Amino acid sequence: MLGWTTELEELRQQIEAGNPEPNAKPEHLAMNDIRECPTVFQHRSGNLAQSQAHVRELVRVLRMRDGKPFDPITVFWVGDGWCCIDGHHRMEAYREVGHQGPIPVRAFSGTIEQAMAKALQNNARDKLPMGREEKSNAAWRLVIATKLSKATISRAAGVSERTVAYMRDAVRKITASCPEQALDALTWRQADRLSQGLEPLQEVGSEDWIEREAEKVALSLQKTFKDRLARQPEVFARAIEIYDSRLLERLREWLGTPEKDAEEEEEADF
Image (cartoon, rainbow, N blue to C red; front, top):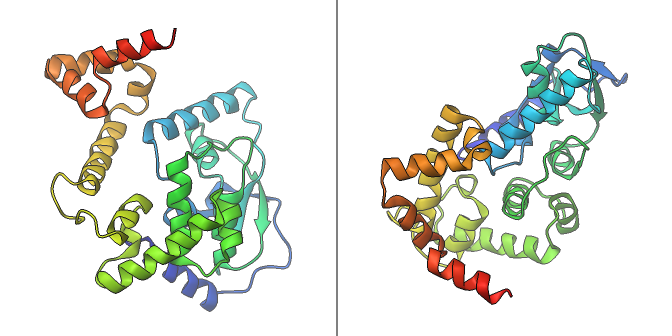
């Protein structure tokens, strides 16, 4: 997430300096006329393989119905054109099938902060559900980048108002103790730990270091294998075993589910 608030600020300035939103709201737009700013409006931060699999499913559905468009994509005026704030996976699916012609859109009017909340709050039929950690990260983004109320952030992200208040308190603590720390470089889990004075972010082997390194590996796997590892876990497991016969056991130990414990748990269920 490093630096995404810089792009947000540039977008704010572009809106202020740009043309006012047209009175006539579009109901359809050509793909080339829809800008995308995923670092600002795409709050998703989780499973890359799951995301790729979701796009693959959308592509399958599009082909089954001969390219008939999905529900409207939500767009927002950014001073010189319309930007997608909800529907990034659907946009990618349209590109995958080489969709021709305009696609349905629904224009959202409001401030850029309200647009960010709208992007998070929308729950379209064709949208990939967000996990608990992703919702927390999305709420954290709204806390550090907007002045939206606790209630608004709570509704948009699907977290409690108490959690939002706790995040705001974390901002104050981090700003006071680590003024040089860029808040948009942190996930919520990292920010939470830092606000409590736990392991420093740069410490090799810390939870935060592991998280950052794991994201790099996950990105590399996604680029190389797309969603194949998720679709063929048995192949992945065997590949790990071939790579290093001891690695599977070490993974079980790290996850806290060694084979013996798993067997004992299963027996305890009866």
